[in-house]
Structure formats: C-alpha cells, structure tokens
Length: 387
Ligand code: GLC
Image 1 (spheres, rainbow, N blue to C red):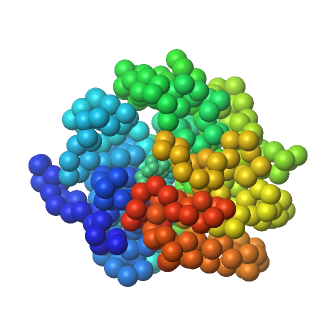
Image 2: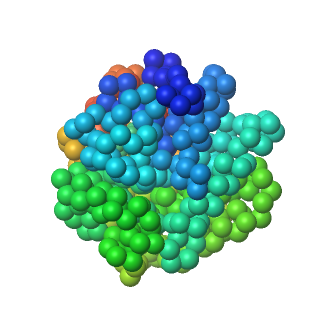
C-alpha cells in the first residue's frame, strides 16, 4: 500500500523528490508529520525509501528552517482548496508557509538506526529547523513553542481549539480569514502574537518537540538541544499540568489561559520518560485506561468520551473530535509498555489490528464500533504494523 502511494520525480528546477502521499485520492501532496510516520514504517522493510522520504522533507525546508506543513511537489493544490492552504500567496506556492508538529528529530533518529553517516547528514538541517522553532515560535521565551494556526498541531478541528479560534476554526469558512491575516503579515509569529493574540502553546506539539530535541541531542551531542528539551519539559509541568484533574492543558493567547478540554493531547506528555512517574501513572490510570474516558473498545479516542464535544463517528469536516487514530496509539503504547501496562497495551494494539483487518487502512476508526472512516489507504495507519 505504501508503495502504491509513493511519488517520485523532479520539480521544474531539477530538485528530486520522493515521498508517500498520505492517501492517493484525498491527500496527494507531502505532509510534514505524515512523512515522518511513513518513514518510521518504511524503515522496517525498505530503509533506503525511509531515508529518501525524510530527505525530501528536508529539501522543502526554507533557508531559515521552517519545515512546511504541506509541500506541493508534483502539482499545485486544487483551485478550490488552494485559498485554504496557509501559503504565502493564494495560488502558485510550492509549499505552505506554516508548519506542523515537529516529529522530524524523532523520525530521523529511528530511521538512522545507528548509522553514523545518515545521522551526520541530518545534523545541519535538523539544527536549522529546531533553532528556527526556538527563535521564531517562542515569542514569550518560556521554553514552550507556540502554534499560530490550529492545523499546525495536525489536530486541525480538535474541540480544544473552538474557544480560541471560534468562527476562524479550521472546519469553518472563517479559517480563510485566519490564513489571510497571516499572509498579510508574512507569517511572522511576533507580528501575529502582537496584533491578534490567537496563538496557543499546545501540549502535544511541545511534548513531541521535547522528545525530538532529546533525539537531536543524542545524535549531535550539542548541549543546547538538551537544555531546550529540559526547559520545555519543566514548563509543561509548571504551566500545563493540572494537578486537580490529572491532565495537561494547552495555554491560549498572551494571557496563557488554560483550555481545559480533555483530548489525547492532554495525555501526550506520557511519551516523556523524564516526567515524574506518579504524573505518568495518573495519566494512565485515571484517564487512558478508564472505560468512561479513553479506555474504548477500539484504539485510543482523540477526545475523552466524557467530553460533551465527543463524537465517535464520521463528520464530513471534523475528524479529531472522537475517532481513534493509529498515530495516537503508536505514540502512547510504547510508554504504556515501559510503565508495565503490557496487557492493556496489547489490547489496544490488537483492537486496532482487528479494525484494520476488517476495514482496511482507513484514516480513523470509530472507537466504539471499530468502523473505518475518512480516507482509504491511509499511510500512517500502517504504524499498526510497526506496533
Ligand atoms: C488531515 C489531518 C492531518 C494530516 C493531514 C494529511 O488534515 O488532520 O493531521 O496531516 O490530514 O493526512
């Protein structure tokens, strides 16, 4: 299936590319975090292709260090969709001017699998990317990076963003205005934060940021990456951890208002081994495995089943408001195993594997019934094989 989604060639200026599109019909371009997840699976049976997928992502990086959310290698965005992509101009851009959850450091280390040459090849571009995030995306200097548009986390329409973006939410037509405002200010986070105050310090994004910084530190030996990882982890504990509810919450706008909606992002810091063990166990026991919250029959729901906004099934414009996604399980199952919840971890993996057997590699699954929804032949759902 991944081979069928593989696209390779040369852009008009001669730049070679090779990537897996997330789903041949619905998502024909290259997406940042999708490509990282694809490469993580490719590495199991075709490491050369895994490397080429990550190299292609790096070739799309701006000289300053922005890795685009979406790259249009082999064709432009379709005209009807084009104005809604966060590009510098409504038509004709080669890539978007916004980014996505920074998984590249983590993916590079896994794909390198100890190969020094590939590690060295990644050091300069990875440092450029993570230095850019530190310089451009931490306007208040607290060690947590900010997203400017809701889809920069990859969780486009998550209900946790409703109170911040309202009519400009990703699934509403007003999203166009959010994009337009950024175009007019050249996507400068400092200008946007100053003028509009719609940014957000997202828990999932920062947990992955810290994990990737640690990977980059292991690969490069550069102390600044470790320092930043530790700062982000400490800030997550100090600012985002809600001791009473036992969950991590995003901080919205300059006032750092906590968005107390329980989504799987609230559980994401589980992936950070440096966090206190009792905090991680609370995430698992009070939330992840609780049958009223995230302990669903199939996979891990993207929103707690207790939340009023929880929707298990299909919605044409909204997909992060309840369904189970395979990348979520891929991230959370490893820490579950490490903390000694092996049986529960296997149950989650088996429930998803059974859904895939029955329904194929779909974009997401109903956590109550296992029914598959959204795109067919969806690339990162193959992470279940990796698990
Ligand atoms: C959807 C998802 C996003 C993903 C993209 C491509 O927009 O919300 O996370 O990167 O599709 O698969």
